[in-house]
Structure formats: structure tokens, C-alpha cells
Amino acid sequence: MHGQSVTGKAPERDDTLPGDEGVFFFITADMAMFAVFFLLFMVGQAQDPEGYRASRAALDPMLGLGNTLILVFSGWWMVRAVEAGRAEDWVLARSRVLAAMLFGSAFAITKAYEYYAKISKGITLTTSEFFGYYFAFTGIHFLHFALGIGVLAITAGKLARPEGAKTRIWLESAAAYWHMVDLLWMVLFPMLYLAGGTA
Image 1 (tube, rainbow, N blue to C red):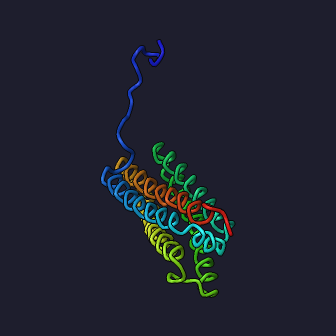
Image 2: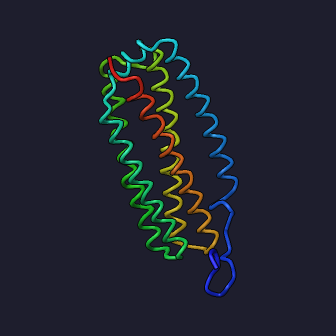
Image 3: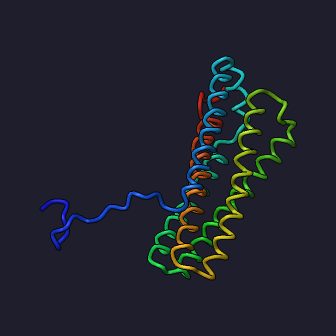
């Protein structure tokens, strides 16, 4: 019958969240906070579309796209790390977490360059309302990114001394947090760099 295994019994579904429930509560609260930030930005843009469009023209969409690809590729490595962890191949899982850290670290380099380029041209938090939001949102996101790198480093350490299910839960929780960092940037990128076009 459809939906049944060869033994005649329906396969069991695991409806539990991967990782720790407390981590998912934190992620949900954090995403709600960012949703409020995004709403404030949209209201500001609706009130001054030309001002936002002119400010947005000073951003380099290719840098934003590059950072997006960096985080997506890093997140892909974390997906592979979780797969290895669920198979209890801790050595492979650790190598994939380290790969996620390595690729993800490129985000810090490109973001630092972008901040430097803007500030050297006199563009700061007080230049315009748009750039106030730009530096605030990307700065808060960068703090989440830096925390995520730390979490991945701790995870790599725990994978060097695995403790079975406990280590798997930690790995899944770390991956969930890292995917949140990815997702937030996937919203920030089009909102800051692309929405509304250029002047």
C-alpha cells in the first residue's frame, strides 16, 4: 500500500525540530525583531522614494551579490555537515563545518572592504536616512555573523570529541543559527542593494 514500508507498517515520521528547541525560540524572536526593522525601512522608503533611490545608487550590487553567494555556499557546507553528523561520521562532519567557516569568513573580508570604501568617501551612518538603516542593519547582521563564526568554531571543537546524540543536537542547532544568518542577508541584499532601482 502507498505510504507503507515493505514490512507493511507505515514509516515513522520524526516531527521534532532538529537541534535544540531553545535555539529555535531565539531564532524566531530574532527574526521577528528584524521583521520590525524591515517594516520601518519600508515605511521610510515609501515616504522618500527618490532619496532612498539616490542613496542606493552609491552601493555596489556586485559586492552584495558576492556576499550572498559566500553565505549560501557556506550554508551548503553546513547542510553537508549535518548529513555527516546524522550518519555519525564525526570526522567528515567536522571537516565540513571547518569548510563552512573558511568560506563564510570571506564575508567578513568583503564587508570590511565595503565599509571602508563607503567611509573613505564620507558616507556614514548620518549621511542619510537610507545609510542610517544600511549601517545599522548590516552592522547588526555582522554581529550575528561574527557570533555564528564563533558558534561554528565551538562546534568544530565538539566534533573533535563527539558525544553521540548530544553532539548531533549541537551540530543541528549551530546549522540552524547559521542558516538564519544566511536568510537575513538574503532579505537585506535585495532590500538594500536592489529594491527600487538606481537613480
